[in-house]
Length: 628
Image (tube, rainbow, N blue to C red; front, side):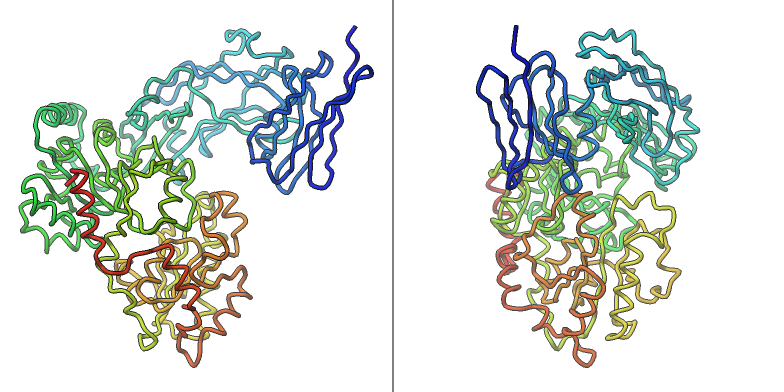
């Protein structure tokens, strides 16, 4: 008879020690330094158990906001440092297979095989299926005492869920809704995504194309599957252009489908390669894309086209060029499907309405090369695994422009791109901006430009958001040193007009952002990459990061190390007051205080180019790659 096993865990001097012992043998020990643990990454201790300990929890230790746990599963002892949601889910095994999902004008129907296998006998309660934050539908989730999900018949845990389209569209704030299951494990609420069992649409190059899309009640609705099998419901307000008959004609399945297949025919059989150039929402030409287009047009007439909206302020000065094509025109639609590549400072989705219902346009994006010129240096906010630019996602670039070795290394790691796809030439926008043109003699203009936090999207009271509180607080401090007309506030579109009804109204900037950065002697931001643009022009930068811990928890750790920031940092209003008190003298912004030699040195390691020749280097690189 096998001797009984005993397992002990302890933490000594920041080291986890797991000991397995039996009466008739020496102890087996596994150790791990806690700092060496990677969050949510399972560690194998290589310790096996007897039948009595085959499924058991040996350690549950809070560590900061996470849980350190040691447990056995199927006779193998594991260790993990996990967030609370993931840690509780380790206590169970899930049956989670959506057999079919359909969306039509009657609503959303889901057939799902789901249940919980509970060998550790934890408490399970309050199960519900959720459509993001839109809708919740409680249901009875079967719990099985079996040791493995393989032993459970799928027929024994089949469910059918129906959500009416009217109920789905009731929420007017949430756009992107992931379908999840929520339940309580030992009283703690956890959620996990519902998974589609067989999703051919989620594999291959067209994984980002909506499975279903249509218009209803002034909303555009879509059903999508993510590459890892998540089910996503999208519902957004229709854009103004989507109401027009002309748009509906060109975007119809019949017309778009015909253009898509005709375009593919010519692309595969014609040596003529067509490149489309555009900027944000096809509404401007101010970030260097136009100049690169002109170079391409001169070298290869008829191979390059610049797309821009007729209502754009830049359209009038560009429209005489025969290669400038109005957005949503007949020629635009032909080029949309005939093009072989996109060259832009924005993702290809900016060619049309964001989250377009046009499945053929979304397929064409996957067919073509995308050269991402970037409009801001990627060396501040983390581009996490959910970024649209990560390898395998909808806007993953074929090539990307960067400004330094530092940025190149970060891009390669975060976006999972190979080094040969990262071109270090300097961004085009810096060829259009005079280097360090702002001096101590420049007008004393301070600009406030904070980032919007996605986790505040659902806030019912805008005045309770950190965006509102921080903008108001920074403005009030600046008013001690500057008149209102010397303070400019660049607001995010998601503020929905709230700030225009406050005392800040007269300071709100309504012109292009590029223009205000050109006069910003001092920029106060939190996590925006515009700091590098402003510093390039000679301005000083202050980073106000009072919510840094929460921001990094929700969005990932910021890129710069503490000794890489190009300006002073403040983590409270008191610290900001102290920084600004030292940086102002008689109403004048002291650039020597905000732009020290150390900040200058740091900046030059993040942006290596200041000679104004970035566009030339970009064009040379694209010609070498035969992309222009």
